[in-house]
Image 1 (cartoon, rainbow, N blue to C red):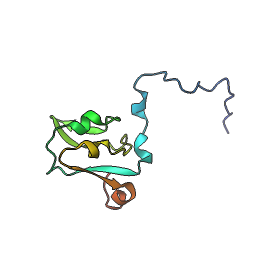
Image 2: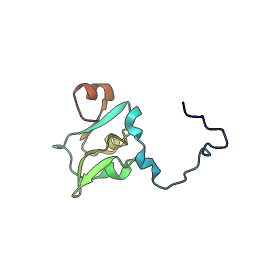
Image 3: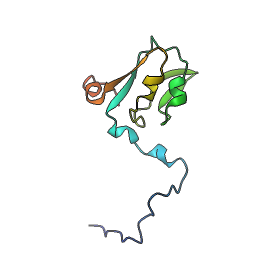
Length: 102
């Protein structure tokens, strides 16, 4: 069994010692609701992209193509801001039952 670190060996909490380090953390694991986009309704206005606090809206060639569910926390801002109601928030457990990829 490895030796437990003493308090002097632990990193100081609350300090970001490397910029952009949050990208390496899978913060979408505790999401309760998952955004689901209806591509037929989406007009690619990208308001969801502009307002997403987690940069979880995936855009390719100036079009919204889905969500980065490893970082999406399911806040629902994208669904609230969508002018054509193309995004709905689905209970995570229900979406998982339907076999959607995380």
